[in-house]
Amino acid sequence: MIRLRRNRQFDWTRKLTQENRLSVDNLIWPVFVHDQKASKENQPIASMPGVFRYSPESLVEQIKMAQDLGIPAVAIFPHIDPAKKDATGSEALNPHNLICETVHLVKSKVPEMGLICDVALDPYTTHGHDGLYVDGKIPNDETVEILCQQALNQAKAGADIVAPSDMMDLRVQEIRKTLDQNNFQNKIILSYAAKFASAFYGPFRDAVGSTDLSAKDKALGFRDKRSYQMNPANSDEALREVELDLNEGADMVMVKPGLPYLDVIYRIKKEFGVPTFAYQVSGEYSSLMAAAQNGWVDKNRIFMESLMSFRRAQADGILTYFAIEAAKILKSQV
Ligand code: PBG
Image (cartoon, rainbow, N blue to C red):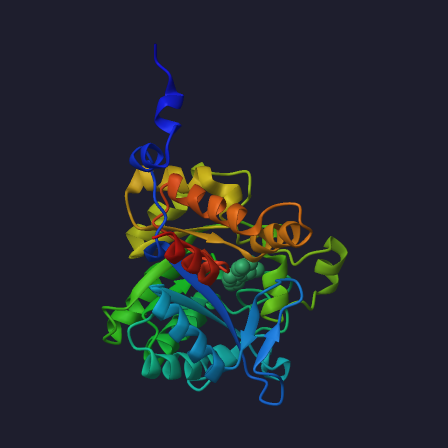
């Protein structure tokens, strides 16, 4: 008789028959940096328990620790002084802005760590949109021109990977062109190819300080990015987005959010066989964390199970705010 429980009897049979594995090599740690010199080194983020905005200097220490744990890359997000924000996000192009200075500093102190920078204007705009915002609309090509300059600015500062998260059409092609023309042929483009208009980004907007809503968005109760981010109901369209971005020169693609979109990750990896990453976003992290803090679920087990599910869905890498804790747990298991 076939009895599948036979292989589940012992630790060693369970190990031998395990189909997927999670390793520290799969983890990317998203981190926040702030520029408030007068404030504390580490600012807690109320909506993301256990996550902090670090000063550039203390971020270096954190990244050293990540490196010691074996984490291959970090994605750095800026929380800038609101006085530096404007309608066009011009601070994004300042070669001495917070992200450039931080990348430069981290590269000089922890040169082996992979550094990823988000290409999008939302941390820099007063309206919090990822692009320009004119008469209630997000003009595509005008935005892309600025994004190219932003990507170039980050490349010059030492970013290894630029990650357009804005969902404008044709941005990968234009960014690739700009980087190539400026002798940055080796800078990697990780495209947020299938990024959905999701309620799971709520706590992140708090983390980067982009919470001021326009009257229209206030009426909706959320910042409306549905004219550029994808409809959560679609997955054929996600494949088209990925195909376009690959043709335009993306080296890696990402699906975001993660857990609610495992099917999309699986389809993309199966169809294209390219490096495919998943972003376990702020709202996923905070939901699991809140339940854990209430004692309703076991924190380590629920996070490790969710991270394994990304591997089962064939994601190569996972951006997760739980990366440090996950790396420690993985280390304790060997
Ligand atoms: C914006 C950006 C967002 C995130 C990463 N880059 C938010 C958004 O699109 O509104 C979300 C990350 C998270 O929620 O953890 N370019």
